[in-house]
Amino acid sequence: MFRFFFLLSFFFFFQACSDIEKEVTLFPDNGLAFMFYPNDKAKNDSVAANLAYGAAFTVHPQAYYTLSMDSDPILPAPILQLHRVLLSTGEDNKVNYTTRKIRHLKAKKIKDRWEYSFQAEESESAIWATTLLGENGDNYSGKIKNFLFEGEGSFSQSFSLNLIVVGDFQSTTDGLDENALADELLAAFRKFYVGIQIDTCYIHYAHHHPSLGKKYPKDEPWLAGSSSEDIMLTELGGWGKGSTFYALDLVLVHRIDVDGVLGYSSLFSANLGGGDLSTIVLGTHVKNANTEEALTSKKIIETAVHESGHFFGLRHTTSTSTDIMLLGDASLIEDGLKDTPVCDLVLRYGKSKAKIIQNRGFSWPLPIIPKMIVRADSEMDDLFAACPDASNLMFPYVNSKKIEGFSKEQLEILKKNLSLIEH
Ligand SMILES: [Zn+2]
Image 1 (cartoon, rainbow, N blue to C red):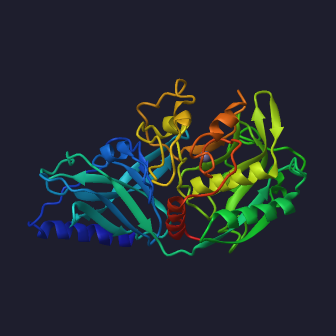
Image 2 (tube, protein in one colour):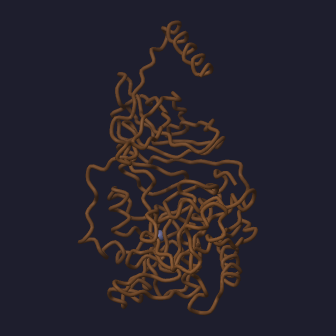
Image 3 (cartoon, rainbow, N blue to C red):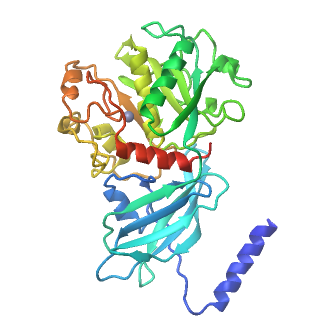
């Protein structure tokens, strides 16, 4: 309390003595409907359009960030104001936010770009938001072109896995028990995360959890989204202490109780400890109308690696209509990477049903991004296999093409984003 008072006093003192530059503060005023992510290359038109009025992003302690855009030939560079977003849950369980200004940054002109660099002096990850101050003391009115947000931290290029078995699990349909599945998971992560070390895969059982075990009976086939309200089983994240606490939490349930969904992760969950956004959910089965289908270990493992890609900030190579609807930005039709092709068929599929959610407000936690299996018309598996990006791990649909892995640009994003996340 004392420290806060001191800082506040200092601020007023500074204001009173500084006539050279009158500081105007512009707070976000638009509901913070759009978020952006480090090292993301997607088009993000809605972020660019909202940067002056409020766009949100996650920062990690002590990481270095650069926000940049093309310079305008006529207008002077805006001031970037950064605000910390403070979340609170209201009586109706709705998440509300307030903001407090923390930074005021001038642009550096580097060639034909304006760059704003800063370090996140936070003790834990936090949500910040932008505003851009124009020359007349109001929101900058220039068009933001080629917006880019880059981040790099100092955490290691290695991580471990937690396989957290929830409820009844005997074996996968091809006969792997949890020990064999953990071995195969580890082998797959080691194969696909080229240049990143995957140390080990720990196995845990939800019914053994020291404080929550009773909530997860050993004999119950767990249906994520029905057996308990939290589809992500967030409370099971951050298992144990030390290296198991900071391992990537793969929560294995009987099935996700949503048609056709094999796995869930939030886009750039970026939390290897416990708490919000620390889990990835995987089913051993997939729901298909009133029935279900048992998955092979290969499908479960490929889904795990796919979801981990989202967890560390990768988008689908081509966006599904659901992605565009959830993210609310029609410019996000693909990941923006030069070395991952785009598939017209994915863009057309389901488009007639999807509508972008209008008048979006701040949403927290972040929208969760599924890996889908297509069953309504199973010939889609073969049609999707003809997509030029079908063999990439971040292709959104299960299909009959052999998975080759992540692209070079995807691996670069994974490495940079891993360096940001405490582990
Ligand atoms: Zn996905």
